[in-house]
Length: 189
Image 1: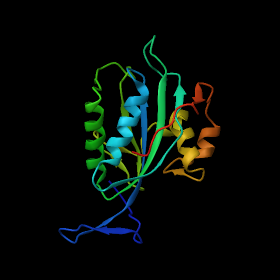
Image 2: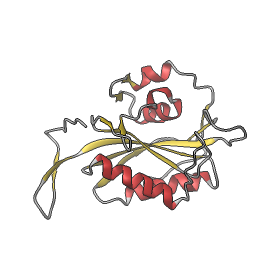
Image 3: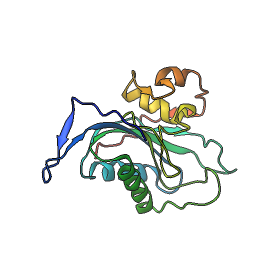
């Protein structure tokens, strides 16, 4: 893993005095089983309740046709959450998996199987990771309009490391299966 923290933004651990950089994190949320909106809101609230994590933005909600999912899969609700944090990327991944577990996420061998909740780390600052347990930036984010569109709504000038400006990546994709749901709104937590 490589990382260049912003040297101008640091946070001191109140117990040890250790200085830790604050990183901008992009999390993508999705749900296509059960009470989809309740699962997304629960994830936002759980993220906001995480120590050393500060939610700075929540995107509009989008309804999307499942991509590469088994036949008969229901549409997803998707959103993006922006946070600032001093937590390490692996700790964030552990937290994301724990939040999925609270919402009874079942992991199967079926690729893109329906799920109650999916919490993906898209970027953690400019950190790069190629571990089996953590890939950063997310290896398929540049191909997913359901990630890029909500992210662009929050940060029109966002750049996906190693791929380029989010709005340019989005322009190259077919967004026809993506519908903004202005009747649904997530609270910051």
